[in-house]
Length: 414
Ligand code: C5P
Image 1 (tube, helix red, strand yellow):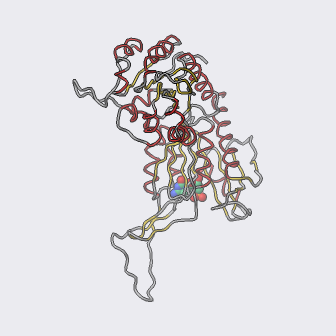
Image 2 (cartoon, protein in one colour):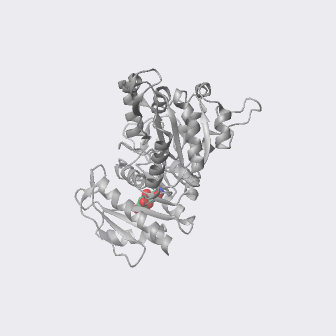
């Protein structure tokens, strides 16, 4: 894969291997990449910003703002600009901070806010490299946050010792970046931004009581993960959920929105920027009309009447502002024998491309179980409803994510 036209953000930290960053910038630029460099303060002791700026043809960023004029160096816009962020060399110190969310310099703030893929090329003494703390930090970065590790080499180290810890050569780093980007582009949902709603909404009655439902978020969380594994960037708007979210590639942004109103606002703000959405949340259809600010004092033996007001139908309202090219999936949880008819009605009522029908009549389907049995009903008349067997929620999520990729493919080839 050529890096031609790619936006590569290079992070340089304070290791003797920082001198190799000059060669790395040069190789990247030679391959047609646009390169921006962010350095830590300590890195400046090993290589001057002037050297890197000259090679990258852009000023180097070190601090959150320019001390000469106060101009803000936005870590957010850097992270948005980049197709890939590589930290090379990555010291034990920076790796530890990345693994634990420390944000005490511009490079780390950029890492925390980056929405692109990230890799690190560790460089340190062999004992530091093999220390369990460093190994654990690398594991966290790899397994929990999807950071790619460009393995250091065996060889002579600056300390005079011989062992593993020498940063990979710039040529190898370039090759690794090419491979990462090629792999990402080959994924069926590469470059797509998908909104997923999940979990149960929580509607307050008073400061201690609420109205909610049995949704655990398992299906929606599995879906967010399946979409991310196929290359999508996922914004997961979640209500209450007991499911654990795995985010192996770091591509899922989790936004908490507990009430139907909060979830509606979170979706309305983000949906226009999305390529698609899967509405999987169990959103309350009604919410207490007058939530109390003080705890309600019950009166012995007297009934308590709770007035409920309708909430926004998020899927339907997003359906109304849906642009051509946006693909939306919704769920239908039915208990009636006329489940399929009701589900089909939602295609139009909510302007959905696909409805995923869950029938609570099927054993193993519905809330809290690890399995689900669904039928995929497509707006496209040529596609008959696909009745899937009882599968794990992860397998169901994979089928839904594959169907979403097919729908995007179909509009691209139209
Ligand atoms: O109309 P019904 O609640 O059966 O529709 C279910 C579908 O609509 C699901 O995809 C659910 O996430 C979505 N929905 C919503 N907002 C609501 C109610 C349902 O997004 N207020």
